[in-house]
Image (cartoon, rainbow, N blue to C red; front, side):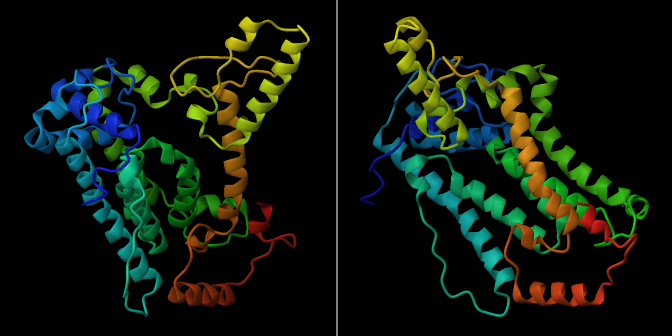
Amino acid sequence: SLLIPSYRSTDFEVHRNWLAITHSLPVSRWYYENSSEWTLDYPPLFAWFEYFLSQAAVVVDPMMTVLSNLEYASDKTIIFQRVSVIFMDFLLIYAIYDFCKWWSIDRKLSTLSVSGKDHVHFQYNGMLFGIFLLSITKTAQQKFCQAAFFFILLLNFKHLFAYVAPAYLVYLLRRYCFGKFRYATWTEMIRDFRFTHLAKLSLIVLSVISISFGPFILLGQTNQLISRLLPFKRGLCHAYWAPNFWALYNIVDKAAAMIALYFGVITADNWKSASMTGGKVIESDHIILPSIRPPATFGLTLIFMLINNTRTIGRPLSSSTYVPQSKDETAKKQQVERSTPFTRQSGRVIQEHF
């Protein structure tokens, strides 16, 4: 109870404002509301999650859901939001239990500890990682349709998990839509493709997307939704905390600009025009180095992801590419590998083509 009123990040106000948006406004205005700088920029399923939370929030403290009450932080509001995050962590606890039950199938699960780091951040990441872990567990258990359902559900709650999507796509296609682990020729591989399994996966994915995005597409808000979910104008290093290659790129640009400013090559106006880490939705360019556009970053990311996922195409035997295996799964893999002959053509296994 002593920790309930303790420090909270800016995301406390973000999610309080989202409670107010979804409670006070009709669905058609959720992704247009901008009276606060903390606009709704999560996928529709999370917006509906906020809506259902707001039905309880208005009972606890009606002022919490008033749109004009910016920075509102009553004791009841703090308690409600903190407790709602803690409560949703039970999904993560269940997911950990389900994973451990599979991974340590020959042992009793005696203890279970979960760190409550997200109780300061208020982004319900415990719930989201719970869904993510459920999808990983179902993949490891070879329940591929359930794995696809949980992962597409996760993407429609928080689209930042899209960075894992190529791994899921490649693994599910290779592992679930093909009948064999190895093929002698490309022709044999293509002929063995299971279109019925692809249809099942497609139905699951399209159903969840339709339920999530369908109402907003019917309202003609597709472009508005995309602009909120993919705010490319925030820059390469949003709000100082993006520890990626582009952070180093920006540092080099700033250093070069300082030298150029010192020698009079550029003016102070040029210096002020570039702010790569402000966090707000503003568009800015680099000063000295070439400015990096969204298609360039998307293309580079996709290339490196595909390079990594070629291993999955060639080694689809188990989920060990991404998650640890249980003892039973490891033994089964070793048995299959010993019993499966290396079919050769021109002295090469088709796997080696990858």
